[in-house]
View: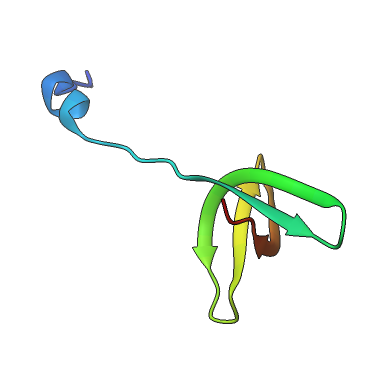
Length: 59
């Protein structure tokens, strides 16, 4: 069975990846793809296959 792709439709989709920087402890900062914001004010980011939770760095 042959596969067909609708390239114009695929190219029109907008993908947004949000990079965020978090701080874990006093000295370790990690930048990764935003996973979710937690109710307690912490933020989860993904780097590769690992997920980290920490405080969001403000600008």
